[in-house]
Image 1 (tube, rainbow, N blue to C red):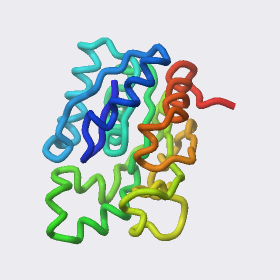
Image 2: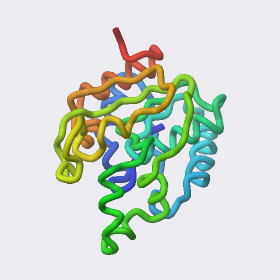
Image 3: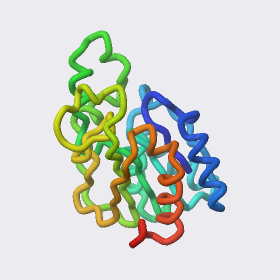
Image 4: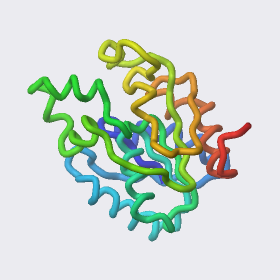
Length: 196
């Protein structure tokens, strides 16, 4: 099951889905409107879709990673392994700065509190975190200082207590477009670790 982020939706995950299928994994694209679906509703809809589809693995991108983490927290027996890519667990400096602009504020919808402040989570079992470290993207001018992927600072993607985490030389968009990322995700879903 692949869960998209805020503004790019399912088309942003088509290439990743194709690559994961080539790794022998079944890839179903989850549909939800991140601007209007509150986190609890998105989480429960994901739980329902996981149950009816028989999916065992779940991958979330950006804000979709927050939905996946919340799903895993509330439904720990409903999945075998989960991976998130560039998820703003600690909020986003770029989102905070953009949110100050009234003309842009509406683009965040009900996702604004999570994007601005993050989500308090502890360690989640069978859960991998992938962070991008290539500073390329529209928000890079808002992220001066420190490692980032062009949208999120590396420190914003850290999940307290996470044992399985890897940083890749990829931009935020590159996390879903790269062969390397697909290989890393496939390895984690198959083996429960990112590698040596």
